[in-house]
Length: 136
Image (cartoon, rainbow, N blue to C red; front, side, top):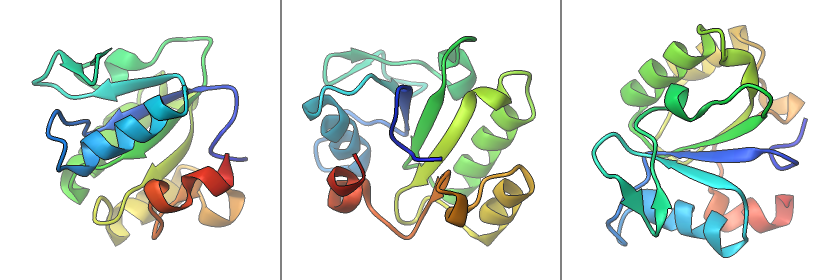
């Protein structure tokens, strides 16, 4: 399963600070006119896009989602575990981790949930700003 497709993209850790990757990744999606929702619990809007406070709040039945994760590994783990163990967990089809947003514990957990690098539904050790266009 490819990361890109007919789905909505969530940027977990979106930021208003142009120096941060949460800003740069969100801008990357917006510049390509992709359907993207920024996730940030403390900011109502980033780059003109209305934010949701959590992944769960953003997920809606009848849609498929790919997640771009920019948060620290412990935040990433807790956020994804909450979602994947909820009734909405099956709406998440793929996950792309920016560098430094994951660790072995998180990857192991995701493997148990059916996300694998070789299946194409889990991407890490890669930056969407560098490789994203080649995967569109």
